[in-house]
Image (cartoon, rainbow, N blue to C red):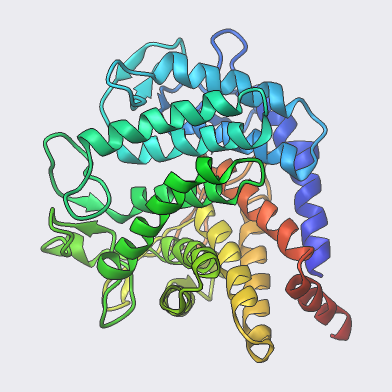
Length: 399
């Protein structure tokens, strides 16, 4: 059953999604990828956010690591060159928004965008030996900008200069992910990894000490400048998709460091998201709950389902066999939720938003989602080859 899902998703990715985004999504005239592909399989002419093309660098590098036989390396390298040419600023970070023709409309700093610029560079460094040193130098230069101009006095980073609230957990989550990617590469030296390992530890501790509520175990999204919860309604926002995503990341980190606090926090985050953040009637993870776990935003988006799947696999790999039936079922539920978003659209595209009444929004497929999708497929592929994964898959034959 699980293997069937994996084979189906790999085929969809290799045969449909990656070729379609290369054919219709990449801009042959100006470079880079479009913000969306329409349901008529045409790349949009919308302005492009600074986070999208770095994600596509990661996507095509990951495709190569998964074994896709398309021109993934060439795509990744020319997309990285596009990012640097169009979004690079004289301040040393990447800007926020550009036209399809390559005019930088908004050169402002966004911490979230820098996380993906660094993720793209980590991917290039991992897969291309000729570009490895250059990618490491560029990543270190960007990190130096973050440390010199945007470092928070206690931990993490500020999101503007001068600092202004709210500070966000989400950009730090993606910085944490990026650090673990750098650290996890088999193709980098210990010296090349060291700075990222240290930052991963800082961000992991920030999550445990500030993002996660000591009383409930829930993870808030927005904070005042001293990392206390943002006053008022903003401080009550919790996102189930991010709970699943943090659960996956904290589990990875806890294994690397032998940190039982992170392992326990991850399990609690997953429990909260699965219990209060999944609409069982529609079978999907929703966008938002409040800090008392009441429903806040019942909209369901594709990315949350992908993170639910990754979180479920993290739980399977970090719990005793007696708990596997529960998490295996959660994994299957997440797979069903994710695949729901691929139905009734052209092959290689997806739906992004499921309304509370069960209707999907008819709209173009956002390029940004492919990062979540391929990450989930890659994690499922990796999981299927682990000892735990093999044992969990074997349970399919006993049903």
